[in-house]
Length: 131
Image 1: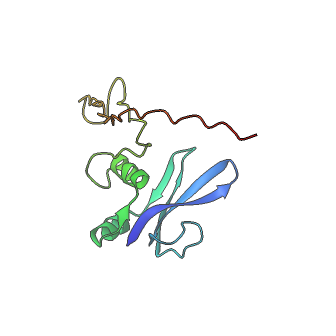
Image 2 (image 1 turned 60 degrees about the horizontal axis):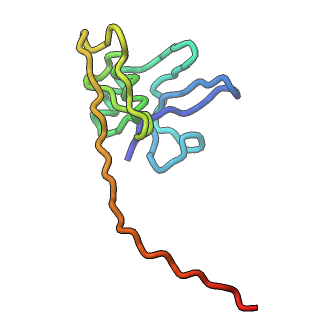
């Protein structure tokens, strides 16, 4: 399966990323890329992107990662809602003030947790060591 994902380039403590298409099973750093789609610098928010190629690869079945999907939604390349790329135990908080969704505030519903009730077992008898 083909993935559209970040490939880290740049120095220590100064990240920069390539946006590439590659096989999912390959490592992002060592795998041979199929096509270079653009670059992204998270510090300066500089983005160069070949939008036509991105749309073409998505139509061919390439799956963007969550971070790439959110970046493409922000830039208007694809339509849709952003996905939560944070860990499952950290809910995504809505932005305060104005939001990018036309002023509609979204609320995050609490996630119900299932609690398993375990019957208490009898304590094990104490064993005294033989002298």
